[in-house]
Length: 332
Image (cartoon, rainbow, N blue to C red; front, side):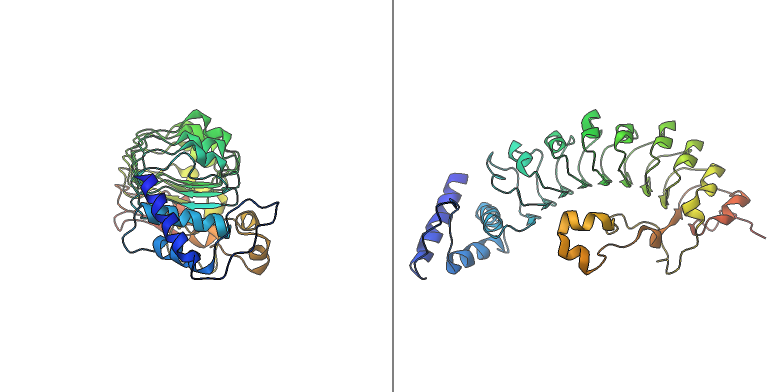
């Protein structure tokens, strides 16, 4: 099927050759195929088709190879798999968007994306974390929500640059302590899983800025959470909590007053770190402006939809708390 698809694209491109000026001879040092404006237009039409096909996917990949875009967007294209050579000659790609497809595994050629910094594989059919990603040492952001992943491989520690991992709406029953070795990790979203116990090792996640455990089955939080001194956003909503350790109230970033606060906790997808802008988007973007929301604008804690009857008075020092009406906090 794929061979027929590629053959169709070749025929389209050949048909376009007669409608434009002859192409210039390639320089001897450049073996890449050259395309006329008409040919590129035909590829673009296939890539942007309202009902994506295999031809659409191949066209999008071909266009990216030609234009050397840092973003390869293949979201929502009904992709079930890739040929082994799908990502060859695409070392320039830094952001790969594969969300809302039917993927359950990757071809090994994704390891060729040596400059990849962000990958979106949310809304797919992965039952295990795709270990081929572990060879991409520069990866900073992994968006893998709404799959069927239930655990993290120990080798996740190879991703020394990992800043954010979004794994909500998966099948985790245990907190992924394997991530404690990822010392650059700042954002961890484990919402809407099936986790019932948070281990004491959570204290080792002392670089985390944002943590969401919303929508799990938690009944208690260990006191060691007080060791997470950089924690700025904490979402514990929709669990089975009856009390909170007072150590949370002493976390310095939660006590800090914030001007221009957005009025809610958590924006884990849109926030980021300005030091990564140049690495991902290039020096021009870094010089132009800050493209990320600041974490502190969403600081605070969300404990809605629990069974917490009363908070200790120390929680009065927390700048922003979303809590149930029934949860008493007397700050008089």
